[in-house]
Image (cartoon, rainbow, N blue to C red; front, side, top):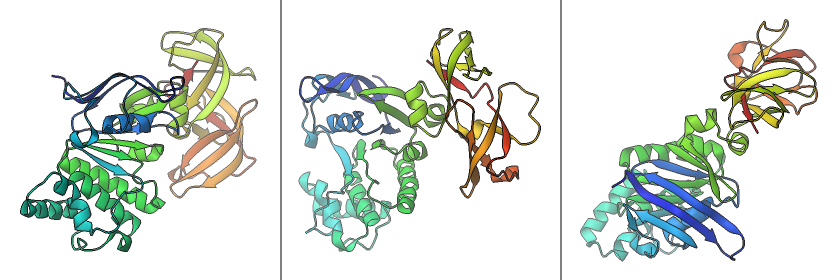
Amino acid sequence: MTTALVTFSGVQKTYDGKTIVVRALELEIRRGEFLTLLGPSGSGKTTCLMMLAGFESPTAGEILLEDKPITRTPPHKRNFGMVFQNYALFPHLSVADNVGYPLTVRKVPKTEAAQRVAKALAMVQLEGRDRAFPSQLSGGQQQRVALARALVFEPQLVLMDEPLGALDKKLREHMQIELKELHRQLGVTFVYVTHDQGEALTMSDRVAVFNDGAIQQIDAVEKLYETPANRFVAGFVGDSTVLKGQSGATQTQRCEVLLPEGERLSGVNVNGVAPGAPVVASIRPERIEAHFGAPPAKANVLQAAVSDVIYFGDHLRLRCALPGQAEATVKLPLSAGAQPAPGQPVWLRFPDTHLRIYA
């Protein structure tokens, strides 16, 4: 037995025999983890979730639950909870009857069903609303009813497809924290689909980044953010400042970048760049040091000019013009005490441990 609850083995999906939506997917979902499938529209993440739920069938490969194939098991026999963006509540049923519906289908005795419904509603903080109808609830409350319904029959896996997409920003952020806490309390395996990178980083134990039908990287959130495996992940997860150039001297783990204006920077050689190849150097905006006045007596420094200063509440975001490059974004904590102004010269230092160089 593996520690994986679910295993995708060589799973492929095509709808028309030509375009491959999911290609040769190898994925292990660990028992009790909060795994997010993250990616742009059309990257294959929702198709992957729908195949796991049983609403779509793989064209090739096998999906295993606790080492047993479930590829041909119908959705209602997989015993998974599902939460969708549109909630899919029955408008003519009360909150209690909506939540209790999976128990009715499973012919759970009425007394036990009532206890389980009460427990599920308490879990999502909707005690006292059991007799209300969906139309009498706010969007956030309807979402909680959908979540209670997915949890009431104690499934071993809960699948969520963009469940917070219809909520406003503040409520969505509040629900993210509540979902994470609920996951911690219950220990149930959550598989969550979103295209919102902030949501993925806030809630997940691990994130699988999808693009073009394949997983580009699957990792714990800190590793995904700090050490992206390729240019796509670096660009899609979080903000990055990007410099284009040509590789100079290279080693297995280090690499030099020659910029068009003649400057040289060194950084981490992520995917085995060869000397003389066109490269992209990428760094997180909060890792760039901004020095006003004299240049720092350190390596990896470029001269720039502040083109814009944007106030973000907890930090300032500087847009800096660099010769021959797209604008660099720098995050400056308010505690730094600097008050830069547009047009001001600035020295930007790119620490080599955080500058990642991609072929």
